Length: 76
Image 1 (spheres, rainbow, N blue to C red):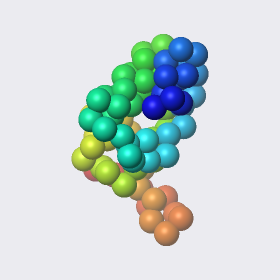
Image 2: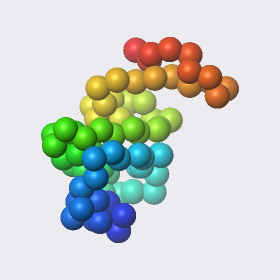
Image 3: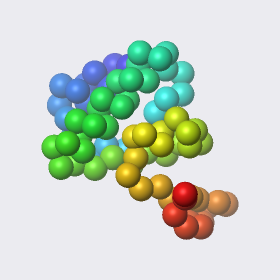
Image 4: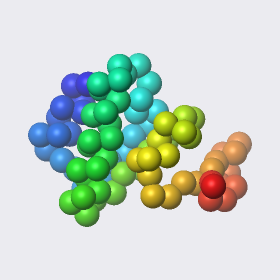
């Protein structure tokens, strides 16, 4: 949570998130969506790595599937 607060105060142009929802309560999970929306709204980009495809579907504009360390194509 503290890291997301820092991001809100000093928004980056590139946001790299690895399993950003792990260990977050529902309110903090909403903060993830807010931060991604703000970065992309300003013309920045966010790279989000997650095993929770359904959870992040509303947050992304493009998905890539990686299997055994190899990009296997765009995810549907």
